[in-house]
Amino acid sequence: MEVITEQWIEEELECFQVGDERLHRLAKHILAGQCANPTRTFYAGADSQAAAKATYRFQKNTAVNQQGLLDSHVHKVKQRMADHPVVLCVNDTTQLNFATQSAKENRGTLSSSSSPIGYLAHPLVAFTPNKLCLGVLDCKVWSRPPQDYGKKHQRSKKPLQEKESFRWIQTYRHTNQLQKAFSHTRLIYVADRESDLYKLFVETTAPQSAGMIVRATHDRKVKGEGKRLREYLRTCPNSFVRKIAISPRDNQPARTAIVKVFYDRVELQAPCPSEGAAVAMGAVLVRESGAPSNATPLHWLLLTTASRDKFRRGVACGRVLHGPLANRGFLSHAQNGLSRGA
Image (cartoon, rainbow, N blue to C red; front, side, top):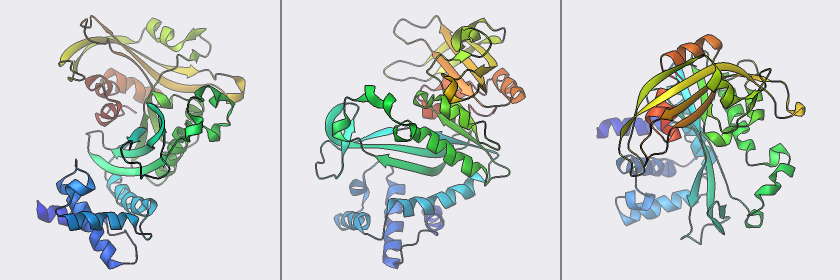
């Protein structure tokens, strides 16, 4: 096992160039420590106090920067992606709370506090449909200015490029650029409800764009139907009933849910004429009946760019649904292959 790890580390860092062999050796030592203790901090994962201090010196060295480390890693991730016919590019935002570390610079507010206590990270991570993590493709990190806390209601006045939500469009565009580099690998962009932006869906109409599956939050209008999306799906003839095994979560035991699945291809109407023409998407509505009194009934709305034939085949065999319903954390949904029909 140690031989395999050493060989992997050598290969993973072969493109990491800092112009100093000592820094390169130190990078390999740090990575080996994280491989041995992936859930620990750098300090706790170091095999000695001297090693921990060396790690901090490495991080503060001006020859080392986040983009340089990420670029060398992405090079290897792309090589791994080329070995798979389908790769899920999973995008989400997480909060990094450093409330107890006042020495951290440029901290910003988080959703839970008006005080500057941390940062936000928006990574794009590559997975195979069988849950194998191939690595990080991109990661944006920023902080919210304390003076902007509590001004969420003013965001509609900002240009799109100045809104935090623009990051979803940027990352999908990045995924599209990656797609152009792969002739035999289909990339599927996967994101949670915060990414439900009509202007993001418009991006999927570009030629040779990456696929997309998002969990929707807005009940959008269906063009030519006079109905909202949920109502339209509930009344369409395409439906079936399925039993789904639900994993334990939030102090709730594992259980079997009986869900009814409605699906169809639809044209989503733009919220306003200035946002463009209607966009064709595959839509899936999942509703649970007879849930236990202490459990929240499953209620899912998914949107996908899969072609009509692939979409119907994917829904019919449950591939678009297995991940979302079997696990209730969205990154897990993506990893479980919800794009195999895309």
